[in-house]
Image (tube, rainbow, N blue to C red; front, top):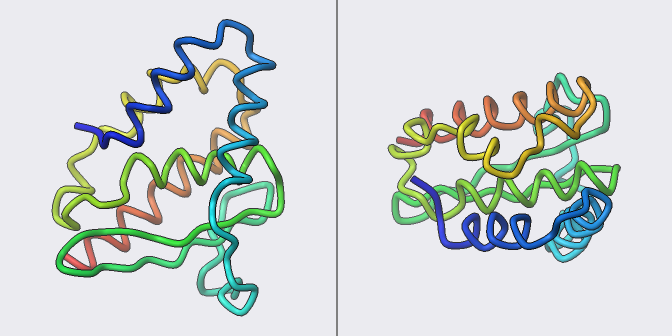
Length: 136
């Protein structure tokens, strides 16, 4: 189960053979994400377990899950954008059913991210699941 936005990212990653091109694309989708109001970058919205600073603020409207996210690192901001594409717009009750590990594996990220970034990515997914479960 994935969104059309996430499928677009998968298709682009499949088209890009070189990992430097994929990293550039990851940075570009992070840059394209709307900026988060610095007032929302609080200890309560900070995701623990990330080497870089990452903030996630959930929103649920009409039973659909969404979030605003940001990071102080360009590649990690791109990872926030990827996770946003994976979960945004899903019914809050469905978020926990997404096999995020399998979906993200389709991008080949696990082979090209540092252990710290991989841990941070897992922490982001866990935080999103917790927020969605609380809203469902």
